[in-house]
Length: 377
Image (cartoon, rainbow, N blue to C red; front, side, top):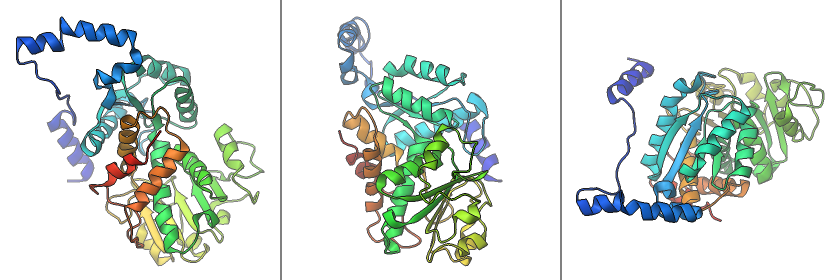
């Protein structure tokens, strides 16, 4: 039985992966009167007058909404809210299992920017933080930025920033193995969607100055006349002002980061890179190049998004700890400084990296705690 069929049968048997548990048990009339009527009326009156203190009296202190419109789910594309629900439920499962955060999966049957923002703002008082998920680029950029400006709780689009944080964490370890400062590396990113844009900008914020981003039409360079606003920002990273294809971009490059499509990276391209190239081929389920082929072509370090190869770059290494820290430390906005601190925390969990181990295992018992401690006001 293949993994997809097995997952289908497992989900049908479970009828969902999460459920609500209770912190309080109304097993007497006294407790019932405290937890519900009439006692709860006093709490309701108080939180109505003091809304900023609601987290001290309700589960919002430990509650995240996982929200999608289903417009960009995994590698499946725009499959809508009904297609998104199993993935959002899975994300809620990981929140609870790894960070003991209660999370509610919510899918929206609205799809333009204004409707999505209005829907999320309308339900925001019910939550302590919001994890945006599987919303297509470039729409996702405006949605996140506006919500961050207009709400006073942490907002993070994990497809962007979870990926960027884990990539940076892996690169901190990998660059050290090559005895090269990451700031001095030539980096090529294939893919200019949510993950590619966020990764490029976080690397820039970390101090990487030589970044070329390549989309389906080639290098995002000065001759391009088809760039949307988010790609125009990436154009500013192209300091050498070159144009051309992925093949051109990779000449003497130190690092390849793939958030694009399977089979994109050819062995001949790796052979044209600098010595000991680092390959992060993260397309799922088929990476831009398989690790064996990459190694045979001369790659020094290879990472993918898959769990069946070494060095899995997985968002789950980042988001449980980031939200745990944001909730515990009452952080209102997750910033680039927080993301870099989280990446450094992830890298610190591999004190003696090797080419086959540049990133901690997702089941590392210290992972969430160490990342959470890095998210401070």
